[in-house]
Amino acid sequence: MAVMQISFFSKCMKREVTFNALLPLDQAAEESSDSKENTKGLKSLYLLHGYCGSHTDWLSYSRIRELSDRHHVAVFMPAGENKFYLDNEEREEWLGEYIGRELVQYTRRMFPLSSEREDTFIGGLSMGGYGAIRNGLKYADHFGGIIALSSALLPYSLPDMRPDVHNGIASYDYYKSVFGDLDLVLGSDKDPEELIRCLKTEEVDIPRIYLACGTEDFLLHVNQRLHQFLLSEDVEHTYVETSGAHTWDFWNDHIADALKWAIETKNESAVY
Image 1 (cartoon, rainbow, N blue to C red):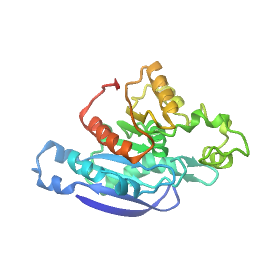
Image 2: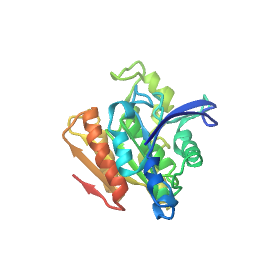
Image 3: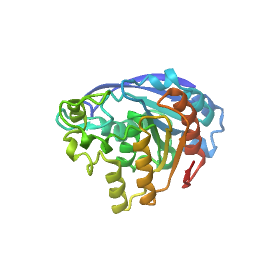
Image 4: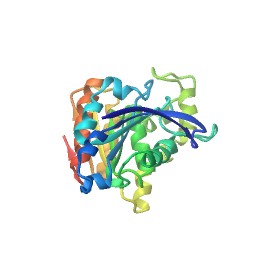
């Protein structure tokens, strides 16, 4: 297992960016050179952290290193910088495109990864769960699966915010700086429902989706709402709702289940 911190100049961000990487290359070296898996390259997971977190969170607080080694999956952990993995047109910082396109292309050039969509996944927790859904759908040509844990699906609630209001996490002005005009978020490319509709209209394959949220999580209602939307649109997905709060205990349990789902299942949906 190789554990690395990598910095490179991002054209999308117009500056140097840093991400952590897990590469189970020792296993690859032991495989025969003519094996199908070795020829195809490693499966990959682009794993996003939550609000107030950093690119070190998953390594520091979760069992992702063990899971990367067990499932023989390369894991890349970039920084979201409290910007919900979205582009900022005014500042010309294309964080969403960096996550959904540039980072995937860069790591494929740098490491022995599979270039197949079905072997490429994006996932995250809370803010990163939203980022995984938004960018997994926005850049559906790159990702075969989306893992979203306790997702902060703010487009459902932002239109109800008013100036001079603080919701206990951030202010109206902060959300406006990240999402733009809050009255226009629904129906835009920041809205997962709109992205699903666009993919269906364009007849583009929708990535497989794994949603999980705890019954004691303050974000449960928005996760349930997205689940109901996916059911109404007949979008194949797995929805898991079990006891748990907005904590690493829940995310550790469910990243293990989700990664197993990503590797082992094909075009199946479940609710439990």
